[in-house]
Image: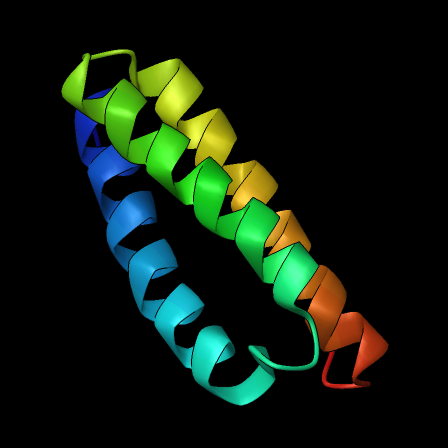
Length: 76
């Protein structure tokens, strides 16, 4: 899988996960979700700029924040 494909796939999955998390935890963790959203936007920006390494990194930061919510909630 190329760096571009990896970045695209990561962002696609992140968008889906974020939407689910926003529905379930949006009111309880608005600050964490806001930061995750900003990193998701950064990932999209870097992908469009063809900076796939940074795009993947920004996606990872966003995933980390979303996973933190799951850990707090005892879901992981």
